[in-house]
Structures are given as structure tokens and as C-alpha cells.
Image 1: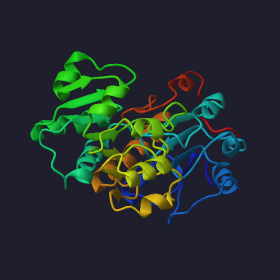
Image 2 (image 1 turned 180 degrees about the horizontal axis):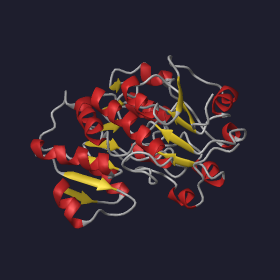
Image 3 (image 1 turned 30 degrees about the vertical axis):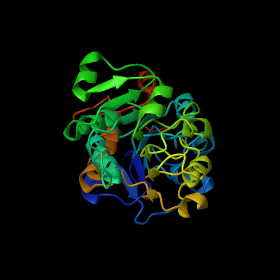
Length: 311
């Protein structure tokens, strides 16, 4: 054993990218996909200084209670609903995600989910106009599709012009969208943002597309609405209770299901792994971003963070 910081990688990923850590860290990487119980996850992290995890690892207060050395949790995802950010921050542990590097891949996949339908001239609605939403909107110009969107607040006018998009309230978005794409993070506020009341407001010819997170849509309500013909179809890459899919959705012929793979292009996944590695290295003072992880989620911890392992 050495006194170098220890890094655990929870899933098999790109060995050549993970190997960048070897110069400065003692690295342990899982060779197989494993679903860890909370207790197993806590045990894996207990003697680590940094961990690189995916969405299947839910990291909260219980999982970090014994991880006295832990300094950073690098998430292999843009969304971080699997992390209890408040608990990590309270413990002085940095957290990071892989924002921006998968925007275009997710946007491409989103369009692929519904391009078996006529789209020219129809209205594209986007709920959640972050960088992925903007990438989806920019592609609409080639199909002469007007774009409307709803966000917590309107985008700056310059970005609206670049996306050819118009801000509307949520009710207008629901009523006017021919294709409604969900690209919001999963939070307490966004859970079941699309439920029975919202579904009944949509056009009977509309298509609902969810590439964000399961739980944003009430899947039971969606299945019932699709069965009644309240809307024409749905294309879902994410599901409430993943990896399980609501059985009523499986019985329908007007829903397209894919297994949470919108960001699963080879290039996007390599970029995500590289960014996670950059975040870990930067936290410990290595690499071009030394001292400032590029996509840190709780930057306040840097003021008091000690990258030197506890004895």
C-alpha cells in the first residue's frame, strides 16, 4: 500500500481513460456491472478518497457515514438525483457531474425517437430549456417546426433567437405542442410534472417524449391516457422505478420504449468518463483544471476542502 489517494470506480468503463489516474492514485475499478446494496456501497466507499459512480449508485448520508477519507464523488451523469447533495455538502465532500459533453448525443437520440412520424410544420414543445433542450430546439429549424418552451424563467433573447424558440407558460405548452419533449432534472418539484391533469390538456394527436428522468411522468397515468386515446403516442427512454417498466406501458402499441440510452453513444460515454476523471484529478490538484473541478456541483466545499487523506 502507498499513501497515494485511493479511487474506486463503480462500473466497467474505458480503461485507457481511467488509466490517467494511475500516476497519482491507487485505483480500483469494477470489472463487471454490479447492483450494490446500500451496505455494499458503503463498504466499497469506506476507505476511498474519491469515487466515480453511476446512476445506479445512490449516495446519501448512510452510504458516506463510514467514509471518513472521502473527498469527492464524481457522477457519470448530467443528472444527479442519485446523490444527496445536501448530505455530501454537509460532510464537506465535493460532488461533480458530466454536464455539457453529452448534449448533442442526447439531442440526436431524442429526434431519432420520433422521426418515424411526419414533423414538418408541427409544433415542438420543450419542457426544460437547458443546454440539451437548446440542442434539441436548434435541430427543429431543418424541419420548419416552430418551437415553444417552458422553463423556470425565459432564456436571454439572443439564445431564443438562436433556437428560434418562444417562451410560453406551462398550460400553453401542453395545449399547443404536437411533440412535447421533457428535458428537466428530477427534483421534488418536478416529480410527476406530467400527470393526469397535464395529460388531459394535451392534443389527442400529440406525442410525449421523455429523455430526462423517470418520475417526471406519472407512468400509470400516461399508460391510462394512451389507452384512452387522450394523446396519440409516447416515446420513453426513462421510466419511473427503473429498471422496471410499468406493465401497462408494455401492453400498448402506441408507445416506444428504450432502456435509458440517450447518452449511450461511444463518443459521449468516453467524454463523460474523461470529465469524471478530470474532476477527480482537479480536486486533488492535478491536470489542467488543478484546484477547480470543471463541473463541481457544490463549489462552496472547495473553500474548506482538504484533499489530503485523513490518517
